[in-house]
Amino acid sequence: MATVWPDKSELPDANDPERAAYRALRCLPGEIAPSVLVPGDPARAARIASEWLDDAKVVMVQREFHSYTGSWKGVPVSVISTGVGSPGAAMVMQDLAKLGSDVIIRVGTAGSCVEAVKPGDNVVGTAAVKGEGLTCNFVPKRFPAAANLEVTNALVNAAGKEGADVHAGVIHTSDAFRSPALEKEIETAIYAGVLAFEMEAATVLTMAAIDRMRAGCIFSIDGYVANVAGGNVVSDHEARNRGVKNAIRAALDAIVALQ
Image (tube, rainbow, N blue to C red):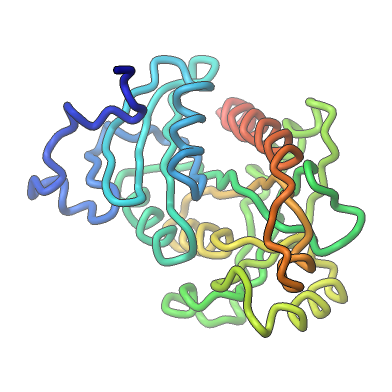
């Protein structure tokens, strides 16, 4: 039988007291690179590690938090899944701060709220509307969730080199994938110039700022959020996968450029 990635058979004990101090990740200093990609999906984290990184290894698997470390063009890189939504993302970011991480890039999917941003396009988030509740536990809602300028510029430059359609602007982070309030939220977002909706970026950006890490985000558009509001939750998976491939490469190349 082929080995299933990740192979958890030889992982250390997640309940070791030293590891348990890092509540979400159960990783130790030195196991996680200074530069980290944080997709939501554990399967996407596994694909990035196995298909893109050199000498990648599984560091730890703890609940939805799957951690890998390898390298891209000679630069150490870790990939860690956050799961869906802001609470898990916040726990990951708090552990990364304790582990000494510097550059954090969310690589995810999002739903477009404007016609000009099409499925398969990439969106680099310059800031995020805090439509979630997590960050209010740390700072008042009036404080912005802004991406680091150096990381943002590196992402825009890297994404554009692959010939994909790349947009840069504000995105919206929600707690609910679909809700009665979504339709009204979309109207306001369009009026305010928001490009897309997703579920973790505001937390990643806010927590990074609090702990003095540099964070950015890049997304593959998998459909239109208006379709979700109307009940059609089926994504354009072929377009999404094209955009994800470019987003991963852009994020990895951005990390190299930031060195």
